[in-house]
Length: 77
Image 1 (cartoon, rainbow, N blue to C red):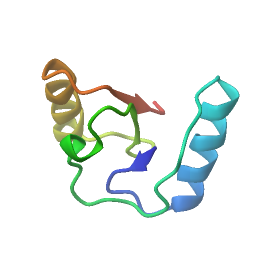
Image 2 (cartoon, rainbow, N blue to C red; image 1 turned 180 degrees about the vertical axis):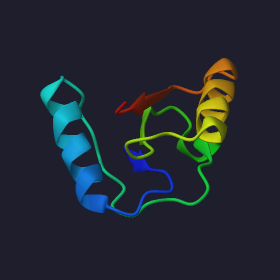
Image 3 (cartoon, rainbow, N blue to C red; image 1 turned 90 degrees about the horizontal axis):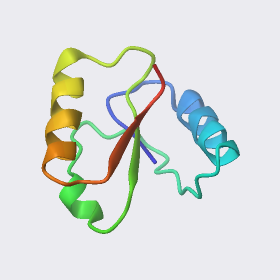
Image 4 (cartoon, helix red, strand yellow; image 1 turned 60 degrees about the vertical axis):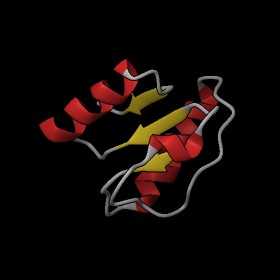
């Protein structure tokens, strides 16, 4: 699980806990990333937390990565 352009890492950990309660087995990258490169996580499922309100650019990029075959699940709203 990674945070992408977030300020509050407490929420990142909370979202990680919520995901674990939903059956995900997760590892949390403790610091937010400014740039997300899913190719560095080949063979892994990425849970991505973008904060309460994902930007349209983030949503478009997440969709593009999913279409390219990356196993990415946005969390939150």
